[in-house]
Every structure is written in structure tokens, then in C-alpha cells.
Amino acid sequence: MMRKYIVTIPVILVSGTAFGCDACKKQQSFFTGISHGRGPESTWDYLIVALMVIVTLYVLFAALNCMFRPYENHRSHIKYTFIESDDYGI
Image: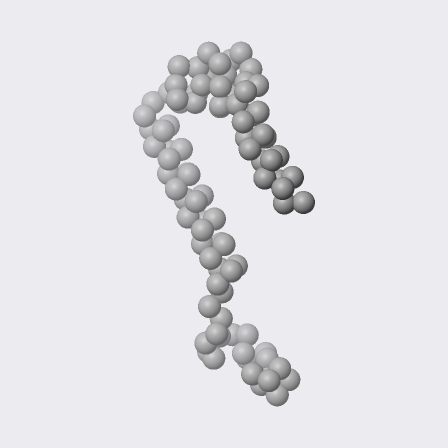
């Protein structure tokens, strides 16, 4: 099952840039054939995209960190107000 995803995801990522429309292929920028439309018009556009990528990667990292290492072991955590120590052996 996992092997199917390992092969499928790179194919989808590569094929998205391989089949750009004519307007995408005529852009005079770094995003030629990747983005649709006129493309970036100034250096501010690159800065905005870079900041969006940084924020998105930070949020992804924080969400995965909270999911896999929740740090809910301290006795003052709110979940311990609902869990009785006799019920769960805590």
C-alpha cells in the first residue's frame, strides 16, 4: 500500500509542471510552467510567497509536533481534572 504512494506522489508533482498551458509557458519568471496567470510582477510578490511558505512550514511542523509529542504528562494538565486516578491507575 505504501509503495503505491511512494510512486504516485512524485508522478503527480512532476506531471503538474509538465502539462502547463500556453500562458504558463510564456511567463518570464522563475515560475515558468508552474503557476497559472501572469506571474509575479515585482520583488514584493516573491517576498510574499516566501513568507507564506515559511508560515505554512512552521504551522505544519507545529501541528505534527503537537500530534506526535503532546507533552500532556504534567499533573496540572486539564485532562487530569476529569480523569480519576482510581479509574485508570494513574
